[in-house]
Length: 145
Image (tube, rainbow, N blue to C red; front, side, top):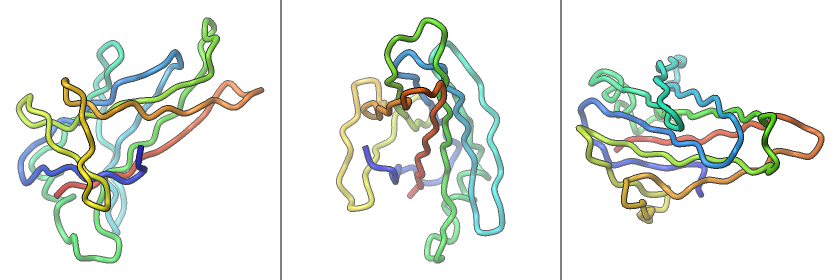
């Protein structure tokens, strides 16, 4: 999966959902990054899904000033930890951006639409925890249009 993704959202509040794939314990965080700084978004956990809510103002902040050299974006950072019962070292996630329960379309920087699963999540992005380590980290940057 691409490291940079664009969701066609338009204005209005959004929900970003992050689903765990694999056996590792994940700690995702999402923040709005602008040229003047960053602001973390609160996370709500429910089983294997972490949810982040973006208000009207949050979405407007990310949509603003798209012509700048460093336009605002959303930065997803995820740390993975091996649990005691993990025997596989693969971990990953899927993302869904939705408004009022309806998944929004996504594309890469070249404008190619990304296929979404029936439930609106992206295909899983899989990583590997290095040998002799119990932790790994990865990130994904995405914007709104």
